[in-house]
Image (cartoon, rainbow, N blue to C red; front, side, top):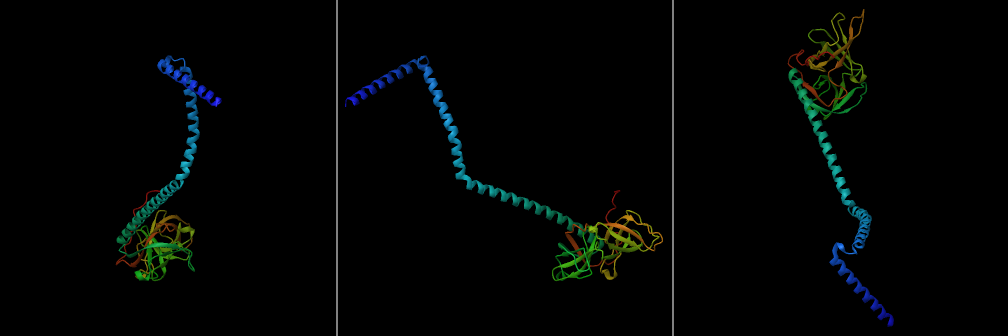
Length: 292
């Protein structure tokens, strides 16, 4: 009992002193003798608050990140999927534009030569028994395609059909070593035979039947044509002579030509289902290239 009264007396005394000190400090303002103590206290407790906040904020951010991680991952996945879709769309657009340009060139060649064609896409490159360089296209007998028909693209001669089903056909390329096509020098009557030599279609061999005929680097050759246009129609550009071999004493001359058609990158081609009414001669040849 006595301890309780003594404690209450001490508590009352401390409260009274505190009130007096607060009153004096408030009325004195900046001149208060307690001003340095109050400033030091503010600095101390403010520093403690800042340190505590710097510790608590990262922890709070960590837990906030954990709570929102699934939503963030979902958004990241959505953005990635959208980027993939946009890139695919851009690639498809470029591919469509390239194919449209190829088709335009092909139709231009067909128009100049008077060839009736069925357009096709190359769907595979594969060898066939007896042939090394062959492709498969997505048109067949249902489209009017038959074996021994000429195949070309917007640059020049590609090959001939050797097999056809209802909806696909196999074409042997002029680069195949087993391939042979009659050819003629531009601007004259000198004829010969073009054979494939492999080498990924970079060159074909042209055997000129008249060993005295003039042939030089840069000379151009076109298809001579076959009877009733099978397997080759006349006037299709074949290539440009790159080198001529010396063949003294031989009855023929041999030269090597770079094909107009890029036989390693075929996409849009045309099958000639109707030969021209007359030989277009050199009308289908592109403008001559400048010095290389």
